[in-house]
Length: 242
Image (cartoon, rainbow, N blue to C red):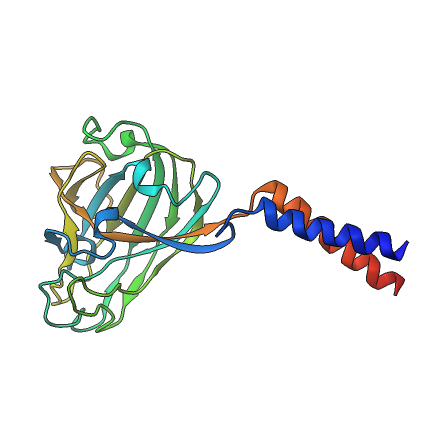
């Protein structure tokens, strides 16, 4: 009986390993636009960390998110300074009373989206809200600059596949810092729009997209989890019998 349990354990562990693709569990980071993962973008923007409030929407093609599969969770994002910055930012701590982030499936294709923010989002999830503080000097300099601090989500977003829509709305930090973030123009795989003001509902203009790094948690497939559970059960049973 004991030898049979040992064989079952070996089979379960090996099967779980074979069923799980490389990198099937654990965190990954995805930069959008992909072309700017290690290359400085062509534009800059300050609106996502500005002293004035902004509502900003960005649509990202599913092809830009190929490293994230359906069912994986997106848990945080971060920005980086424009490469032309010679001083680490912000120059002093900046504080937002309201910094809200929403993620959603895209309702429309890129290039045919609505100027009404809500009309571009299917099943939106507000993944964070409330205050946000960014300490002085946490955005470094370079070309491209190193990534700034992670902005963690209160609620992980379960990726549904296809195009992803990001909505960021804040009320401005009201300070004197005027740091600029790395940004790209709009294209066939990404586009942006905005309006000045917190919690606005419609855009006033199109705009290039901010270069963003998303953190995602890769979740093992159910088959892998079942096999790992069998392995754990075999181990537990073996310990009880020993």
